[in-house]
Image 1 (cartoon, rainbow, N blue to C red):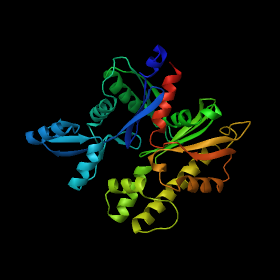
Image 2 (image 1 turned 30 degrees about the horizontal axis):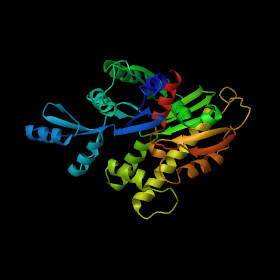
Image 3 (image 1 turned 45 degrees about the vertical axis):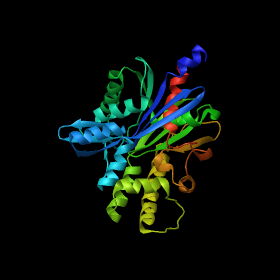
Image 4 (image 1 turned 90 degrees about the vertical axis):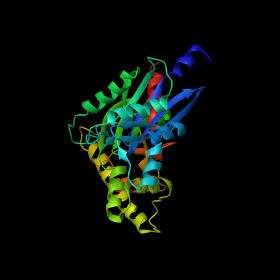
Length: 334
């Protein structure tokens, strides 16, 4: 491996999402991914439990008389205890109701990254402000930056929607629309030759679907999320009430997303003058169910969308696309 290749393998793309934290690294000219749920569950503290968790390699933190099991293991414990997981983030930013959020994000990130050299470069994703809002995301970004710099990394932030463009639209010279449908937000970015022209988010995303479906069916939101990502199919035919309910709220989310995208590009001030049709790429865990792209395209085509699109397609791997885009941005700066 040349020195240039060795240096480039030292950078990391980091997607800190409401639902998951994902890392992307280039190793021997291949991109490798690692992922953990950005969540935790509490169990009563005992010395025996602490010892058993250590023996089994289960990541956890201790807070008073509780043990906070975090990452992927939180899902297993939540299922066994018949309780829902708790989130370090809500609506795309740090959860103000969870005082241990910053500490747990640090631990989950260190779990994913493992051993590293001080000064290693990390490019991490941040959301855009909601459409039509001047909401200040400074605290969220500054807190994540502090988490990473205190751990010894050199860091730079990347807009989440732009990261999708970087990951998926090299063939169009990073010109097009990237949409990341995550747990807390749907992030949208129009890029021209890698320059972000317009970025925004909407708060209707995966958590909205899970919570809404849970309120109707009585199921826990976490169980609904698992079904949604593993076996739900947007096809208009339903085998159960839960699938019917999911379809209703998915359609509500897609309608809201398309309306927001259309409104964002309407009017002479926001409508870019492009010489050719541009691609649109969908990514994120909420976009994973089969039929999502087809339903999104049908709604968009019926909306009289003001921009001409060359294609609407899914990211190669919707769950890792934003982490890959952050890595691409980091590699380009080397």
